[in-house]
Length: 231
Image (tube, rainbow, N blue to C red; front, side, top):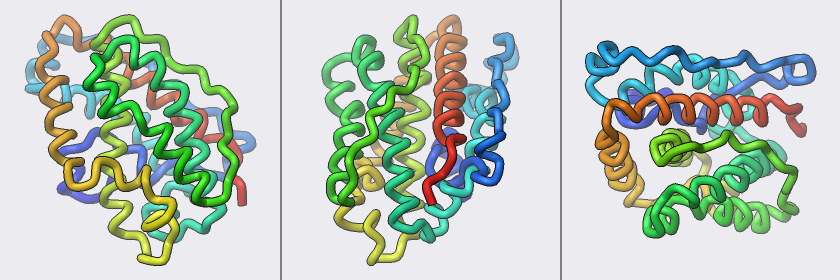
């Protein structure tokens, strides 16, 4: 997200800017290995959200270099590019939602884990058959890890609100095929703040699980968005 107001709230959103199609056939995504957790530095950061932003920065910056996502952020994505974007998001969300449901309570799951259905709806509206090729999901070993993965998905939802405002009114993403970009509508900001409260309630001893899962989730996104673009 390039907008200062969103940058203060969101993690490193997966919405606007990502990898490069010129490099896609030969590009091998850099490996982002979570570093050893340092409690003193974590305390200095003041919150788990701040620490997650810091520790996922490199992965986020790599994702933001994706021209497909840059086109979307500028409101310049063709229908072909937009359908490609929706397909990639569907593959990832369809892979991540089932393991997340194993760790999140029913209310949280009902609210936050329906995005694969939003994507299927958008693809149908765009006249596209859903791509169901599997994506390996990072292993989740705790609720803290689940929140780390969800941090990436929820931050993307928040960031996409700025992207949506930049789209031309006639673009399909602004209308008939825009359910995913709409997120939670007027409640998106509040749902993000509620999620941050969950994150920041985690005890320090559980932070590393959340950080590792967030980093692994970014790597999974990078791999999918590094696949050749459909022109």
